[in-house]
Image (tube, rainbow over all chains, first blue to last red; front, top):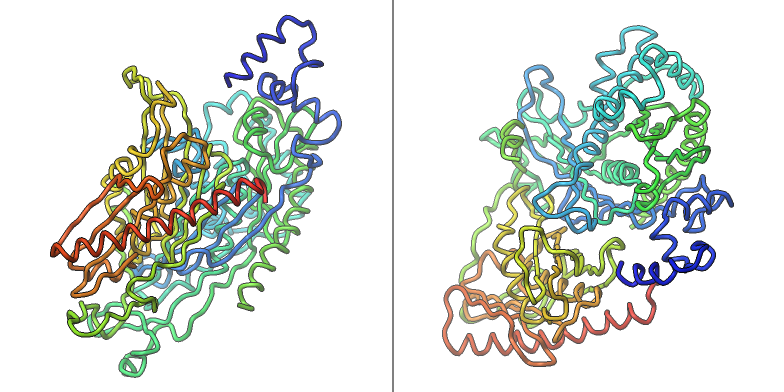
Length: 371
Length: 256
């Protein structure tokens, strides 16, 4: 900052700062004006049009010691997700179901704002959002009673976003509780939700021996570089890791414990029938994809960088699944108001983005299968 | 975190059947065959790259076999409020492991210990006078632990410091050697580390020929220590060259 301060002092003597100041200094001193001037020209400081997301890559199998892993990059935002499978005793309520525990971490390497020992405030929020998005089956089951069920599910999803920042939202949220459902109904119509059924993962696929053993999948997502749109990148890496997951061949030994079967001892262990006969992957239904947009005045900026996020503070995250059905819609407060038309535009942008992301993920999966 | 761990049901990772992992018999006449097929005096191929994290002042990624580490450097920046005034700069180091770094979840070594070891290894190489009153933060994240973690972290951190433009006397390179029977195994993997009789770690500044850190643990004879030190120092100077090359590469083409 120091050289720029010096620059500022020398410039203060002239009357018109913006015409003579260096671009970089202007950017740091008047970030909002800097960005708004770009927006007038329908372009962003990094040269993107407003509705375009940054270059995105997914690499599967980045962590050799995990059962499934993926590295996702959106621009410079990088997320590493890995799944470790462990064996647990299933609960009495669901004896033939496994479990997935999702955790999102922001280690101090990822951003200058995070210091060790003081976890980032956003980390638990994103963690919760990810769990809600990936494990939405649990919610669905409770609500799938009649035709209005799919609708109440969406209310529930939205409420998640609201409860998290309740204090901030009470006044700023554009919807009062009475108008909430009618607006939401419009949203529901836009994305043409016929019916929401089961979730992304069937937990029964994680079962080993009914009532005795099931897989506990620990999905840990680490942010390696934080440059905006953290939730989008985290969700993409989580989905990548889940599609890379291979469940190993195991059998039940005499002590009632699950043991790995490798090729060398497969013959010796023949008397113990393998519980999981071959390496298999999970079937993923309705894979969720997301896009975060900034709402600033009349502009909608897709896939913001951390600089844009720090200057313009109203976000809207839309999650659609692979058949373009709405999974969740989250507007965590912020000073700006969201009009229904803006929400519609965001959903349209997300639909385009889902197509892009599906292509990227499918390419990553086919690359891996060739190797 | 402790409360959270107890709330989840107790889980275990399935272990391979049949053979229990046991220490192979101490070899006196033949050479130990290393699990990754190297000769005893051969290091793992090193991959080093700077600029892994854009939001940091400097960063580096290191991959030695299965050991994968990212180090970010922030600063020099304002010291914590509680800190007293200081003429010289401060160095702050922190090492953490991902939950999936080790074969069994949450079996990671004590990062507090590693943090202070890293601090001591780097301290001597940094010209602290060049940034008075401020702090340089060195944060390391071990993505995957595959043996010789501390030497890899130290090497990577030193490269990240250079990438951040922090004034250094020289970059530090770090290599460890395990003593196992009659054999000296350079750059051991986790499996070899678990069998070892003793280990020796040297962190040095190759072009000044100065050692910033040396630790010896376990069972050693004096001639063995001499031999191991020479091995380490030779490897350090080779590693130093690799570090220099990767730094030059990033300087000649800053953004790929």
